Length: 85
Image (cartoon, rainbow, N blue to C red):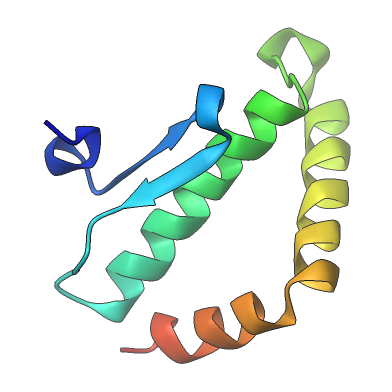
């Protein structure tokens, strides 16, 4: 069974892959799910841990988000179009 059938989405660390449902009830749900799983991926790749403290975590996440936005302009366009639906 596909793991995403039990969730809106999931990040699979071993495959470095975000898996999503084929459809969502709204664009905002799709966008929020992608962002949610993207943050799981960042935490896994950056090995972010709560004990590192909020300021460190926010700095690391901001760096990864900036890189994702810079390297994936089509994702940003998709997000802008999708979040309002």
